[in-house]
Length: 379
Image (cartoon, rainbow, N blue to C red; front, top):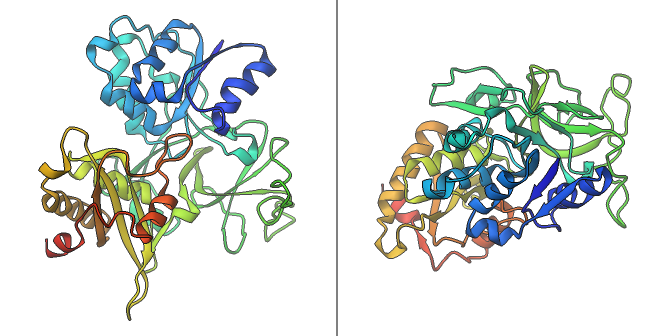
């Protein structure tokens, strides 16, 4: 086995995949500069092709990025039939991403069963659960309205209001439970709540801060589930024995008492117009102000690299995004800001940072960009 990685070593997944796991297991590790991947993603696939029985891991966006940008000429000579596992983690995994990635590289021998959705976090030594190589992808089509109300109810996959999510397999050497984040009640299968983890891989606390309320938490019913649990801050449910991650508690958008998952809104927005750059946008809530109070929803989106901002019909893009989000989510967007590529901040693993984007928006950092609040309201 060979571990192939491009994630930076200061990122928890990169550190474990490329350093800790190879050292403890005595296997070969092949490292790649993250900038080299972003500049030319086929380089990652070439490393996977060159090392039989390769195992790698990346966030969901990286698989979409490869499928969209690797050309047919670059695919020549790739041998992906010998890849053992491609772990997909760090954010909710969408079955459509796995399908696009497999369709793009099926001709190079890539088996769909190598795609392994996973879930983990630094506080639990990165790894909590994952689908096993060779298993078919766990697919779940869920009713969006029921999901917003905390229930994972099935929907038709072709229903435009369905939310399509992938199962992240079963826990590895630890226990996972779903809890109501407010009452701390233990929830049953199909109920959405905060993901709690317990096991030998969980840390004792944050440096110089102690365990606090994150580590060593206890359920309301201590007899049913004794204390000592890690509160992950992530939302999910258990379906057919698999963990299904639905979003991040602190990113949840709440408008008029209804929950909206930002990644779900972002997926709708980027599908509304090809000028919106995929996986380079952030949806978040900001204070409403005024007599009505409440929260307003904002989207900051990069435009595609194939078009210059000066040539872009921003009002048309805004109308398309606003209409799609309204139709699918029943949500009115208060502001849509279109910005140049590279403007939306990202985390160390390459994911969009909604918190930092929100902070910059509130600071007025995007005031000089093409904001479309007025044009969108008029449309």
